[in-house]
Length: 137
View 1 (spheres, rainbow, N blue to C red):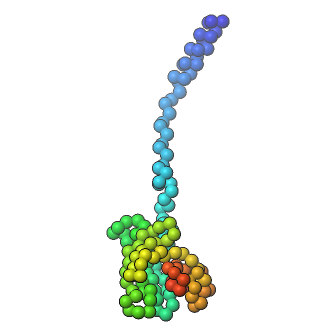
View 2: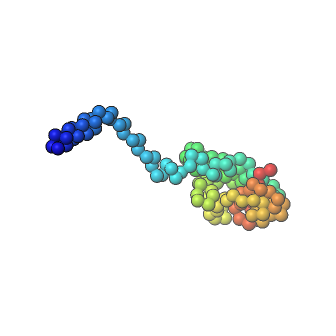
View 3: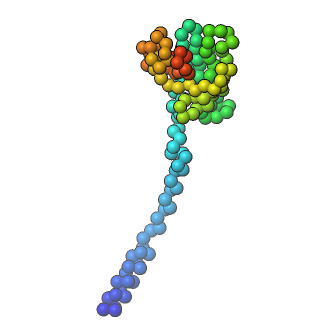
């Protein structure tokens, strides 16, 4: 009985030694990398957007600063001084930016969300506030 037990133990040890070493498992991607998409949803907003009565918005990436940063060139009011280029940054709700009338958030919406009857039937729009929106044709 002891011989059988010794023989089985020896065979188990030898079979374990015959196995080729396994390659180490690759490290799992970091949690942060898996949570941040390669392309931000706000990157799809780059381009020209049209408002009403001559209002317009152009969104461009600000690659000099880095990912998620934008330049917003806009005529946001009827007066000549209601225009400019503003630096924006992607946030949870859209693109956050500051202009002379205070901090703003540019959000995705539709024509109805702009509150402007001339844009009401549009599907692809960006809205700053009710009464200020820009849509793609």
